Image (cartoon, rainbow, N blue to C red):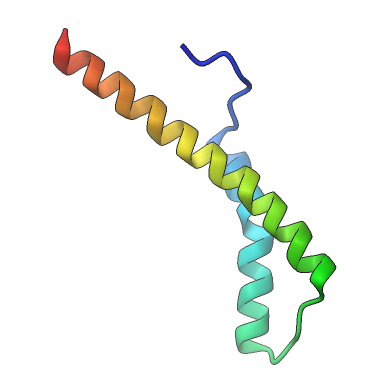
Length: 69
């Protein structure tokens, strides 16, 4: 069914983690982020979130498939 490369859960978390670290350090350590850092971490987080959404879609499809058959 899925022909493209699947991103694993661990890799998804690893790609989202820099955005979380950047946001938390800005909130609690009185630090300002640069536009380059925001753009870079945002792109990484977008790739990581696509991995999560792909996994959710895949497992939802498999669950519905088992209910129907």
